[in-house]
Image 1 (cartoon, rainbow, N blue to C red):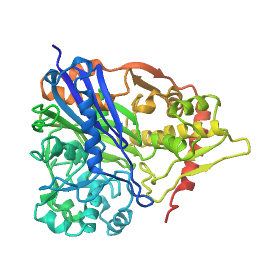
Image 2 (image 1 turned 90 degrees about the horizontal axis):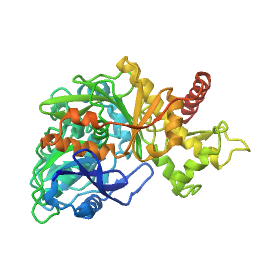
Image 3 (image 1 turned 180 degrees about the vertical axis):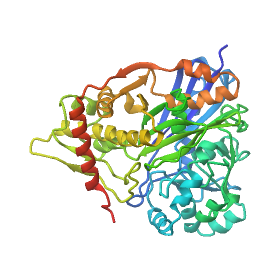
Length: 495
């Protein structure tokens, strides 16, 4: 019987479990949303127990689907929302504070203070990242300083930190394994890109005790087995990978210069930069893509904080549409936005601007602006932000990226894909499945277990839908100029 591979894909708004066969075909899946908590403006939290319970529920639902038993599943790969910080008690296994989500901006002032001391270049040189609330380091320090007794307990080794992958691994092994992989560790601002280990100078700078931190292991590697009493007991956990690196791998961007875009809550563009980390001159991030068989691959990354979240905002807060499909249908009814631009800086702006004080803005409205124009402006805002990063990435790498491979829920939208192709001026390519993130985690597990080779993963890709640019160069240039003007007006607002 063909062995199956199980992916746990833990995201910002939902948890999922997906079962693949060794060819990459999706056999079964289940998804469960969990609550988002916004205790103050700019703060975003999750209940770590709800993350675990939702992921466990998805795992239980997928097992046995289609007559497949746990005996038929070779192993598990975990993909996860990155940078989200959880600190828990090693004895009780209970978190001491809600998870601080990657979108959270509460440590902006702490980052400003550090920046004013002149250490940002040092942080970038060591970690490839920037001083920004996005990353885990200042979140960890905030928890230790805000929860009574936490810092003393952390220094004594009584507490554990993890991004969501580490939290799930702890739960799946019932505390037997406290580990992460290099792709997730590289998002904390505590790991050296050169050594692949926690960096003492960064631990000192951010005031994070080493005793708190997990062991860093290869992305495709041994992470223990599921503990007795849980579904899949005894099953090997063979890969852990940050969700954006997972989709880079799942889209078979295994060679330098290959790039992908994932449209999720945020939007993430990564380009494989090979065996050497490229130091960005245009406000992008250097990060670990994965570590396999003793070899580390790196990537250049640009992150958009609000992409699919803008669609959710239009649906849930403004209530102008009831579904993403309705938004698509309305956007299709107009040829353009009628001059309307939306800058969805709801939580500041990420790459290449890195302005946590930017705020959302609509400009260009007239009496004729209607619901369809706003729907199209939301989609255009996602595409414009992606092109901002693409242009910076090409300048850093010194190469032209010929096509964009896209995945994520919004990649199903032909309207968005066409807008993206028009504004980028290059082909946008989607596969027969939008589940590149989950498949990437499963494929890495299959690689570790000897069921797959990188050649086989490359051969599986790709193409089922291709959108070619249709917009004239002059029209594209005009839209890009106006977009940059709109962005400038949104900067430095919440000061």
